[in-house]
Length: 212
Image (cartoon, rainbow, N blue to C red; front, side, top):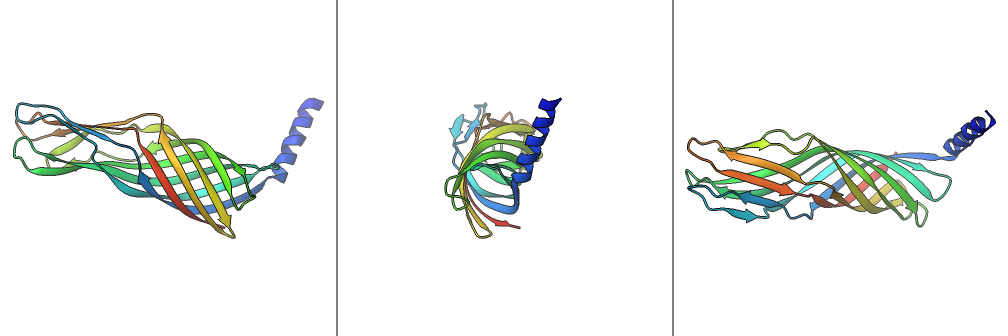
């Protein structure tokens, strides 16, 4: 009983000494991964593989920083995230050019462990990020997305941030542990054209935040 009481008192003391701060944050997302778009060979089309074009995206959300009694801190966050990759293909029936996009729209929840290198002036952090996919089926001319991205995935983040009064400047890298795989089918009668998308996404983020 004494041990339990001691643990409770110690936990209470840690929580009491911890300092909380909240911030609104937004980031510019620069995709750095090389996607694979593959057009499977059919009777009327030639097989090809392309990397497509990365489209710069953004995210915005809220952050809570829990300063521990040491130089460490815990920083859970939540963001709405949006970015994409696109490729232009020829319809195997009409030869019409169509741009297909693999859109990433999701809720990201990073839980980061940080260390204050120079107090609040400069700190570094690392941790996992859970992502919940919001993207739905998309149609591009006669191409229809038949296989969506995974509903849930896990990645990681590593970065640095600097707090200047109420402003927060940050730079971080996010990687994924699994691939985003999708399938786009040409729905025109007589076509058997299939475009496969495969990408283990990674992004570099530059961010600005405001503490309140």
